[in-house]
Image (cartoon, rainbow over all chains, first blue to last red; front, side, top):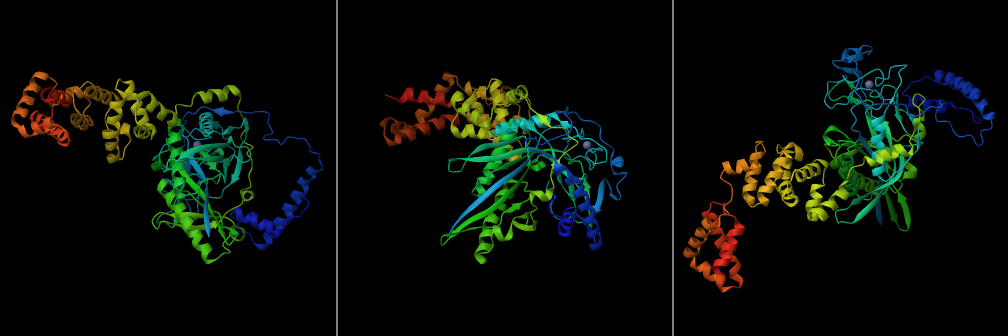
Length: 101
Length: 486
Ligand SMILES: [Zn+2]
């Protein structure tokens, strides 16, 4: 990391993750994240010319399953850990905006 | 001033697998909420996704039919996603190595011109669940749909009207159905569209580009066409009021479609790709596809509508219009093919399907195979017409009856006294009687000229009436000609 991570960048990432952070937290996370990035930046010392990007760390491919139905959880099991439920549904604070998968 | 509409389309197609993309939960429409879920699609910690082979093969089949290059090596990526209908907080998708890319699809415009729409890419990903918040102070989440395999098809910005968008969408629906990779049922939300729309405006030698707006989650052809048409109008109006309303100044934005008000609504500034923070999915290994596998998938591509339509005109002598109608959707094409295989003469079957069958199907808002007649019955009915046992009006009557009667059409024809009279002796007597009582018409016929054809039709009608519609009109005509022509 040649350019230092800025507080604005941390605020932006927090917003994308829908996290509300105080100014103190932003300052703290910025210094913590900087330290992590500096540590990882040591990798840049390696010469990676002509090295293919790695898609996966295991030399394995094509792990498939057949299109066969397996039993799902019951509705009660599925909702057992939910902080709130509304009948057969999970209940969450009202979501506005899109679901843009 | 000159304006040009530029639209690229993203289409999500739900694949017709029995189970989800990465777990064995059943895919079913209308099941009770949160009944087809497991630790994998609920995003529980420590679970591992496993790819559904059928979903991958369907996607490759579709990619091939879209004339795409099929990637021999692909991997999966995580895309950041912060809504509760995908509880992992990321969507498994394909970012830099999609399973297919660089294809095209030809569409036929209303003026019969063919236009080629380039396909940028088609990749696999998982769907989110459903958030419901109508009339509530909180949101309800149903995760049955979470993890459904989706094929995302992305076109180049080659579409230049709302109408072209609709035609492409309908063509894709037809293609997916013929391929058998998706039911592509709009009512069940199997296809969703997201057009990216802006305008290129030239005025006084200057060129302006309006901000690109992506309209999210359109789930009908009508909504797609209306939304694009609305954006074309809105963006032009905005720009007329403010020439600084440009892509450079305003960037991209997401808009929603309000189906009641028939207008698009601003949602938010569009996130840039790096805001999704894609990174390789460590829980899934890459896919490599070799020649043998690819060849097998290729061999599974069935006859597609264009080829089938040509076969119908060349092999069966159907006209272009009927051939197009019969290949308009998979259910109709299958029905027609099966009725012909069951021994129905092709032209007669085509008439019955297009004139009676599809009319009934439209009235009932059903598919051809759902209206109650079997392909065998249609084949048998076609044979009755072909052999001259019944005439066209009797065929219509019998068709109405077999909609909820499983018996052989001939049985029904006999029971309802609809077998037409071809017995020359009996018909001759009727013809003689009509000739004897209609001297004026006989004279007109024999004089020739303008009135002749009309007079012949009149005489024929009289015989038909006498026979209560059961006379074979072809034979009656021949008898009249024989008796009156000098
Ligand atoms: Zn599951």
